[in-house]
Length: 295
Image (cartoon, rainbow, N blue to C red; front, side, top):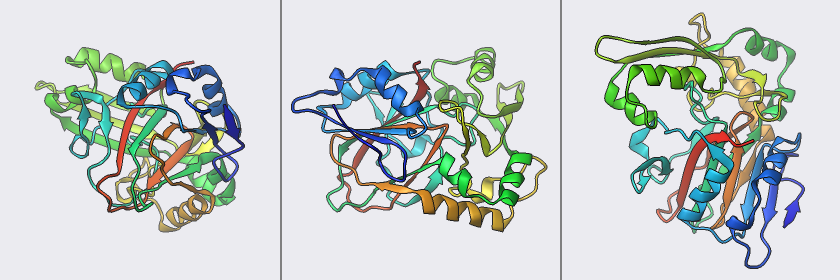
């Protein structure tokens, strides 16, 4: 296989296929090692023969403990499998975030497969290394995020909703076990069910913390995508100047990937934030999955 030094901005790798190579020909372990490297964080596989079935098989070689995205309305599912979805509904721009930032089951791995690239070249995916963002923050801003965590609260979620989001889990006891044993990205400060089995939780995480795969400090947050939903753990709003500085650091370090049909992108969701450019071409078709990494 031919490997380029980086996707850009000093991180990530592009792995290109030889003539006639399939995704099934790739060994998982060398790809995971590339993700873990200081110049890793994301791997783009380009030119490999792949289809929906092949993408699913590849993700299951490299991932386990697949999770369902809670925004069910904006996704269609492959063969009714809620852990295997499209992101083709909606065409608006989405600002930088990491996947399921407000969810205690936020995944390690974010897998993307481009079945049809847009014909107009729009709808690019932005990527930014949380290590680079952290390096660009001033000491004052860094200290503000190191000292205080974000807090998210979810109240009285109906059983029909949480049962559809947590794969194969149908009782409060199994849901509690599943959530409490999921690899932590933050702290599950509260988890309870009422007499009608409605779920409530409080989840807290710090934007500056070690990436779970690389082990180095990163800045990782959903702040730019949904600033109004973010509060510090004491309930206070995030100061405007903090958001502005984060935005400047993110956009200074970001790269933008223009999709080619057949591309497969693997993102370390504990290190790299992503975004989406607005687009108009209805032919654009991306499939996604979320999981832990197999080690």
